[in-house]
Length: 302
Image (cartoon, rainbow, N blue to C red; front, side, top):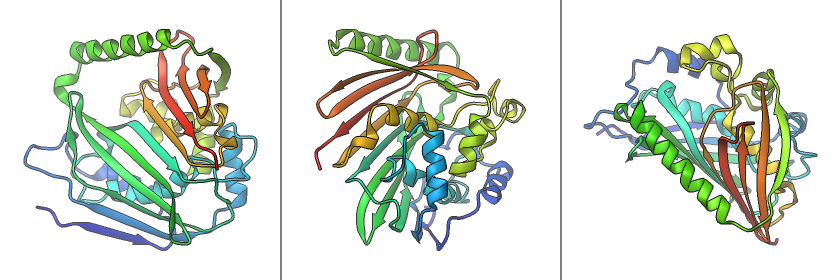
C-alpha cells in the first residue's frame, strides 16, 4: 500500500511545472485492479485575495460585481494545489485521461472577499462505476479557523469497455430520462441566451490560472482528442450560477452541477431555468437543444 502524501504550501503553487510533470508522467489512463489511490492531502496557508483579479473573474463569469465571494471563486485559489496533488507520483492515473463529470459546492454564508482564506484538499480511493472509475477531490476553505466553503469535484477515468455504441446507448437513455423529468415539471421556464466567444478560454485562464491547453486554442486542443478548444467547465458552472441568482444569496447555498457535453468555442448558448422558493434548477443547452450541463442552486435565508 502506498504511503499517504501531505503537501503544504505557503503560497499558491505554480501551474506550468505541474503541467509538464503531468505530460511527462507515464501513468495508465485507467487504474489497474491491484492499485489503490492513497490519501493525498494538501494545504495552503491563508492568502489575501487580489481584488483586481477577483473583479476580472466576476466580469468574465457574468457577475455584476464581487462584493461577496462568488460561489466558485475558492476553486480558483485551489487550482495550483489541486494540480500538484494530481501530478504527484502517488496519484496512479494520468490526469490527461480523466474528465470532470460532477461538482458540488456548499457555501455556508456570504463572505467578505477582503478576508484571508486558507484551503485544504484531499483525495483517497475511488469508485468503480458503469462508465469507469470515479475519484472525489475534496476541498475546504476556512476563514479565521471556521469552514466557510466546501467542494467535491468528481473525476472519471473512462473504462475501455464503455467506448463506442454501448456508451452512446447509456448516454441517450440518461438524456431521455432527464427530458421526461423536465416535461413533468410545471414550473415556468426562463430562457437566457449568451455567447461563449472564441477567446473565452484564454480570458478565463488569465484570471483563474487554469491554463489547460484544451481551453486555449484549437491547435492545442486537438492532440488531446478535441476538434476545437472547449470552455472551462468551471466557467460554465459560474456563468450559470450567476444567471440563476447566486449573487443574491446570503445564507447557506448549495450548488450541484453535472457536466454532460463540452462547450466548443465559439458557441451560442441557452440557459433554461426554473425557479421556486429557495431553489433554481437549470440546463445549459446548445442551439440544437442538447445539454452541456444540468444543475441546481439551493439557498437558505441568512
